[in-house]
Amino acid sequence: MFHHRDTESAQRNRRHSSCSLRLCGGFFLCILLFFLPGCLPSREPPATHPVRLEFWTISLKPTYERFIRNLMDRFERSNPDLRLEWVDVPINVVMPKLMASIAGGMAPDVVNLNSEFAMILAQNNALVDVDRAVPAKVRAAYFEGLWNAARFEGKNYAIPWYVSTSVVMINTGIFRKAGLDPARAPRTLEELAEFARIIRRETGLYGYMPAIKLLEDWQLNGIPILSEDRKHALFASPPAAARLDWYVSLYKEDTIPKETLIQGYQGALDRYKDGSLGMLVAGPQFLLKIRQDAPEVYENTVIAPLPRGRLGIVPAATMNLVVPKACRKREKAVKWALFLTNDENQLAFCKEVPLLPSVRKAAKDPFFLGGTGRPVEDAAIRVSIAQLPHARDLNLGLKQSQELGRALKEALESAMYGRMSSKEAIERASRKWNEVLRR
Image 1 (cartoon, rainbow, N blue to C red):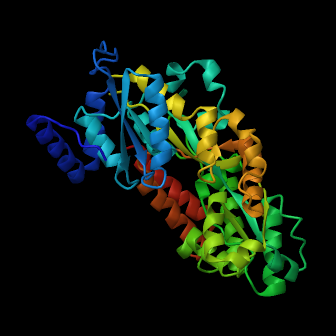
Image 2 (image 1 turned 180 degrees about the vertical axis):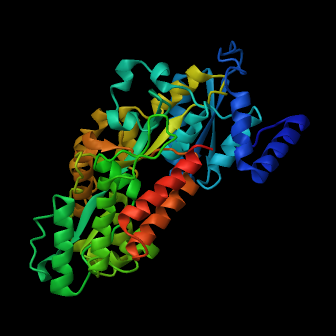
Image 3 (image 1 turned 30 degrees about the vertical axis):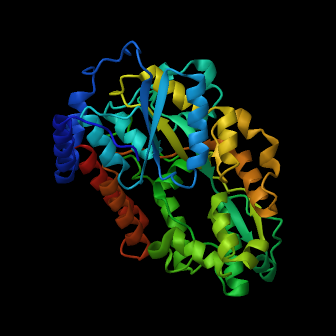
């Protein structure tokens, strides 16, 4: 990480900001609103020396350090008036560190954030609207559902970088033991449940162990979550309760494991690796772990597309680049973000790690038809890349996400464990959401 030579006064201010953040996280949202709306000039000063751009990423060092530094060198050679300084930050501290730096007048110029964090800052007027900063012709190079990953009140505040969509990994041995054809994967959620029932009945093993995400499930099926002003929950509805009932039925009939709510995704991955789970829903990057830890299971894995909900869309996990409003070099910052995410550089990055590009041209490259030389991973990448035109980042970016998430978790547990009906659990969660949203 680079160390900045601050004045003694600036150092005292930054220490004070960091301390305040620890004492009261909400306090910084107020500070952000004070500093950001027009207090700092957006015009870039004349450059007499190379302009310094500070660039933050999340946990890319040391694995991808050589790759990123090569990109930085290329960019600086073609832009001799610019100098890049790269700071890599762990994901668990990136938001408090970023908020403190913005509040202290020391904002970085380009920041790598997931969609949840980007949306929270967008709602606090802390980010540059990239719909205005990027020409329409350039915006069209990105998949529309990914470009809009951090859209708030009709404006977009993030440039998508790399992305992942999940696929279904099938243990062919378990499928055959259950009398199922591994080449005939479930195409709908209903078929997924039926395949899981057959596997449980015929083999005694589990076919499916979901990481239950009610907000995502409801959106995939077109169920409204929030009012337009984001102050009123709309999910206290029969369709939302019916989707929760679907999971409750699978749980009560022992089609999914009793540990589903406790172990979540990690439990599903562990079961798949030890050969006791018929289907795993995961991103292609997790095949690296399966190949390393369970080579026999890996060799007996085939890949299928993710069954879709009523709207036919596929959930995507997107990592983005944002430009804080407090940045004084917006035009140059956007230029660097677009360079990082152009077709050539995204394709090169995808060859380093099994992730997907957010740009259309790179996604059509023959590399994604079989570039790793490992058939299972190549199949997973082919299936994932084919899903990108239907991919959407479904993160709502709610500022009170932890408290709201707890309300939904309590509703899920209450229904799954039989403490109340799905309808009652959903209505209770909706009332809690309304209390929190209207504060």
